[in-house]
Length: 437
Image 1 (tube, rainbow, N blue to C red):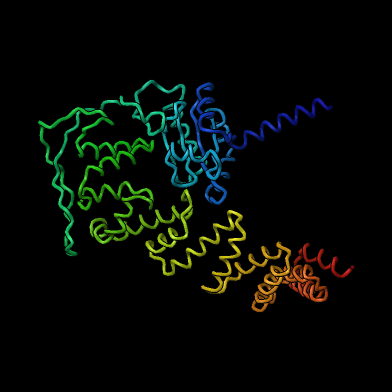
Image 2 (tube, rainbow, N blue to C red):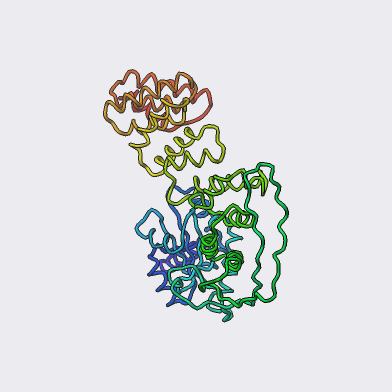
């Protein structure tokens, strides 16, 4: 009987393990060692405690089909971007947003990076594609160099077919608000300018560098960002139709010179691309930065982001952002400090008051308890049917050794529960404690 029980326990635990993706929290060096020994690709999930989308991805990782495939074919690594291993991963794979889902080979070459939320089915499809293309059973076909610390020093890269270098005329955008952009015309073809080039080599013409950046974007290995930077470094004037379209296509973060260029010259971009398209890009990038940016934007950066996305009250929103950040990071002393500053500067906020009262109540010193009491009494003035406020106030009176007020307040909480026909065990237990002693 005992043996049978142990067998059932083992089988049950094995099945349970297969119902969620199994991660290792190990260093990049250790992950690469394991990948070489086991001849597998590596899947990396980067996360942080404050990142709500990361928690959503954790739900997707419980998908049984996804878990079964990834546990079999990948070394799965979970990286806490607030931890000691974060710097190595951030520098190696240019992690800007969380969660970032990264596929690399056993030599550390990045194959794909996803910095947006995906469903379990979408991630499974991507994983199968990557494994079939780059995994141990993939056909031996040369691939473009990856943007990774292991491949950065390599000089040899695959040769592309002969490409015609074009000399398109680039008209600089004038300050005249009535300027009209013409549709882009095909570049002038000159047969004697064909060049056989190697991607990553030196002395590549700018037009070819621009084409390479677009080519690398299709590879989805992250190398397109560096290629875009190299092309733009050759351009003394960014305010041309060709370069503006290029900059817009490669926008990926608010912490870049290209995004600053867009904001500084927003009217020119609107004239070229349309207001709806430009505003949508700004909205997407600023939201990503505020919700999933790594590292988290400072309070000053947050206010700037709210301002450029067109919010009516950027300072207040930035203050709310700071409070949410402190609460998520359990920096409660700072939350209390700036919570009272917020209440002084902006409108009343019942949710904030209640949070402050509960945090102050936990401190147990008289000064904090009196502040908690004052906040709860002000809440009850405008919320006379909230049993939670009365419960918390009764708890505070109890800690202040004001038993009479504690009893009368918890009785009021009991009456509200009865009127609502609900049961609150915390209310009942405190009522019993205060009335039976």
